[in-house]
Image (cartoon, rainbow, N blue to C red; front, top):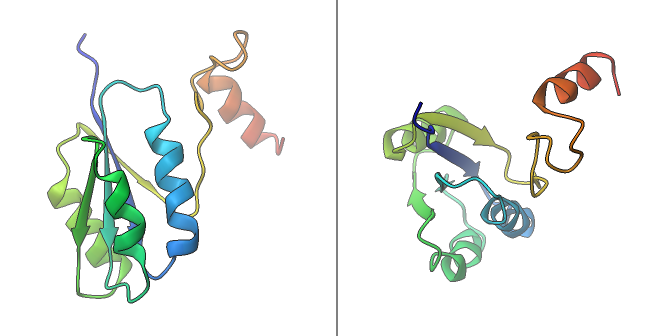
Length: 121
């Protein structure tokens, strides 16, 4: 079975102070086929300037959506994405290097994470 590609979509509005760390954590992922799309939803801060120096990584794309609203930003991201799977992430989310795949602890996998969350751990 072919590996599925992932489009990680970060919708943001005036949250430049968090965005860089969120992008960097996704760029550090060990997944092979991932694209990261930052949808700037009408920001008036330095969001574009935060993204700009990271655009040298071909996995990262920046799009601007002038109409405010999360649904507008999500739709823009979905229409821009090329991945088989769309994953929406918060602009302040920082992911672990091997988030959820069990490689941080060889005895744990994605099912263990779901079980822990269900049990409030």
